Amino acid sequence: MSSMLEQKLDWLFKAYRAACPAPDPSVNFMPGLWAKIDAQRSQSWIIPLRIWATRVTAVAGLAAALLAGAVGLWQQPYSTQVLEVSYVDVLADDAADEFDGDLWLLVGNSQ
Image (cartoon, rainbow, N blue to C red; front, side, top):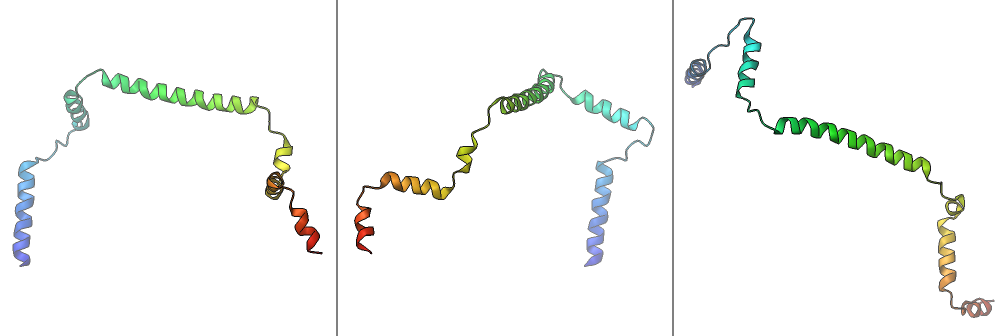
């Protein structure tokens, strides 16, 4: 069984070598390869648009960050009175707003 697999693998390697010739080992291999790639690329208006879009996006992001920072520095801080109120105080004030005045009857009768 293994010799049959080895024969199939050898056939696969031979077919690969026949389909893909060995690259040229000269000094001009990479420049020649890039020349072929550049020749196949189609020149269009999309490439400059993509370059300008990335630049405009970067500048717009920087401008938005600077604007957010300037607004943050320009605004007055909130008063500390709001920050000193606890959750329990807010609940007590809320309960006092809903109080209808009959609670004193319960307090007076429990003594």
